[in-house]
Length: 268
Length: 311
Image (cartoon, rainbow over all chains, first blue to last red; front, side, top):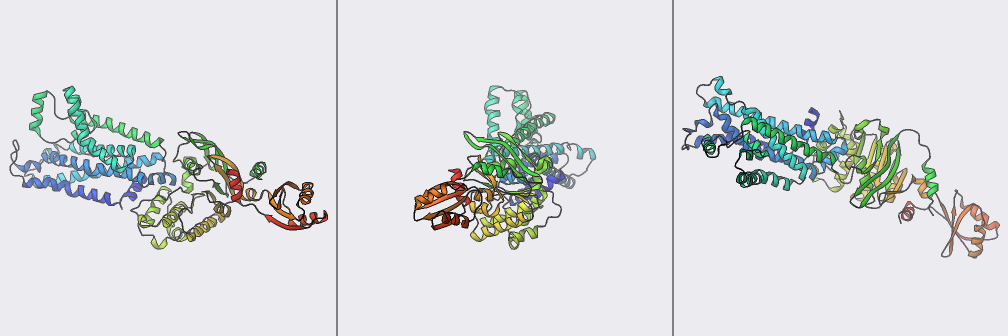
C-alpha cells in the first residue's frame, strides 16, 4: 500500500493543478468561515454570528463549507488524476513498465483515501482552532458533541472523489468527465430527484440518490426550513446520518466495482 | 525464389538456453478486422529478434498483447517459461509506439517513476542518460523535449533496472539521421551484452543491420521466420551472360548444382541451393566451351525477399 501511495505521490507532487487545488482548499476552508465575522444581520433563529465559530456548531458550519470545497477541489483532482493518465498514455506505460492493472487501480483508490484523510484532518484542525478561540467556556462534552462529523466528513470527501474517479475511468476524457461530474451533481441529480421522482411519488425515497446521500453526510445546517419541510410533507429534508452512511457505502462499492470491471477488461 | 521449406528447416536449429517468450495461436480481432491471426513464435535467450512487417500488420498489437495492455481473443503467451510468474513485466523494458511520460516532470523524475514501479533500489540514471545523450537536459520538463529527445528518453526508460529483455517498437521513428545511427548503435551495444531484444520495425535495413533473427508478418499472419542470414542468403543467385545465351542456358540446365535457371533480359539468373563460388561457375562454363561475358554474385537483400514474401 505504501509502495502504491509513494508512486502516486511521485506522479502528482510536481503537478501544478494538484498544487493549486490543494492550496485553494487549505486557504478557502478557514477563509470562507471567517467571512461570517462580517455578517451582522442574520435571519432568525440565529441570534448572532457566533454560531459559526463556537463549539459544537462550528463542526456543522465548517463541515458544510468543506462539503462544497471537497466537491469542487477534491472531486476535480480525482477526475484529473484518472483522466490525465489516459491522455498522456501514462496508465498504459505504467502497466507496460510492470504495474499490474490491480495495483494501478488500487493505487488510485488508496490515494483518494489518503487525500480524504488529509482533507478531514485539516477540517478537524481548523474546527478545533477556531472553536477554541471563539468558545468562551469549553466543556469536553460541548467539544465532542458533534465530533461524529469527522468520520462523516471523511466519507463525504472519499465519496466525491470516488464518484469523480469512477467517471474518469469510464469516460477517459478530462473535459467530458469534468463536465459530467459537475452537471450530474449540480443539475442532473436535482432534476431526477425533484423534477421527476418528487412529482411522481412524494416520498422520502427521493433522498436515496448517490450524490444526495454523500451531501447529506454533512448537511447544510438549516434547522428552520428543514422543520417546515417536515411539517408539510411528513418526512425529513435530509437523510439521517446512519441512512446517509449506508446509502453512500452502497453506492461507493457499486462505483468502485464498475470502475474496476472497466479497468480490468479494457484495451489500453 | 524464396523457399519456405528451407527457412523452416533453419528455424528449427537448436538454441541452447531459455525460451524467453513463446506465443501460441494468438488471435486478436477488432470488429471484422483480424489484427493478429493465429500467430506463433518463439524467442530464445540472447536473440535479437526482429518483427518485420508493413504498417498495420499487427506488430504493435502483438507486442501490446504480450505486454498485458491489450486482451487477446484467444491464444496464449508465456514469458520466461513461466518462471517469473505474473511479475514478468518487471524483467522487461519496453518502448511501445510513442514515448509516454508525465509532461510536467523532468527526465530524472520520470525515470524515477519507472524505477519505482520496477522496484529498482539504486537506479543509475546518470549513465543511462549519458548513453542516450540526454544528460545535459535531464532537469528539463518532458514537455519541452523534441520528438527525438522523447524517443531517446523512452529508450532510457526501457533500460532502467537493467532488464533481461528489451522490446523496441519502431525505435528510430521520428529521429534525424544522426539520431537513427545513435539509437541503432545503442541497441547493438545492448545486444552485444547478451541481452534478448525484440524489435518491431517496418524498416528492413534496420532489421538487417541489428537483428539476428526475424519474423515477417503481414495482416497478423506469420509469413516466414528464421535467422536473418537464412532469409537473406538462403538462395544464392548468380547472374551470367555469354554471346550465345541459348547454349549457355542449355549447359546450366544440365548442371546438377543449379536448382533453377531464369532468363532475364540478356542475362541468365542461376539459383543454387548450396553456397558456390563464382570461379567454379566460370570454370564449368569454360569446360563446356563457352566464355562468360558477364558474371555477378547477387546477394538478395532482405528488401527484395520482403517484397516477394508480402506481395
